[in-house]
Length: 223
Image 1 (cartoon, one colour):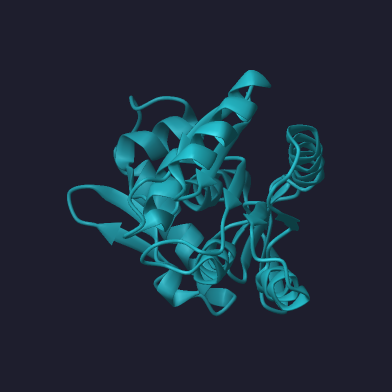
Image 2: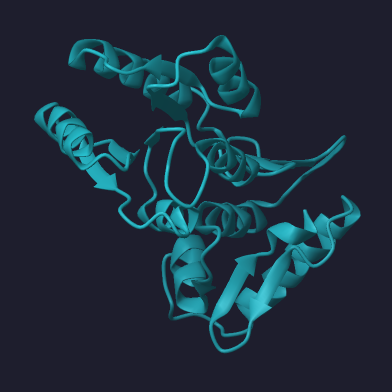
């Protein structure tokens, strides 16, 4: 089942949106605290984000920028703001769809399904900012350069990118790459070192961060 993340501060409209998506076999998460919603969004790993522009504590425009800078999540803007400038600002910042309130449930669902289908077709590539990994070929690209990773290196990078901004424990990386935690304890740091060396060749220094006593994570500030 696909998961929808709703960012709408109007409680009545938010409840209506939740009911619409749940009635059509979607999983639904929603934000109530708009102090730091981006971290919450990443924690829940939705397939589609529905957001309003007018939100407390943070602008919808800023949210679009933050989400698109570090992920490929599709964004559908659902707002009462109805000027051409509002629509163009949203789309230019990276929003994939712009719909004015009020909207019929059928239209909203049709646009949502269309976005989900489009993004499903491009899921072979995952990225953070200018760093991207093509899963089918193990091709990692950064700006105008690229290299081909060994399968183990690609599996490690894929796990780290998908988990961003969370830190993955050593056991999580072992399971994600070798499907077991019962393996030579040196195999993970050796392969992380190989991956780091290849990423440095692309101009990416310190992008894989070692979080002491926890594991590894992507340091997006280095991208």
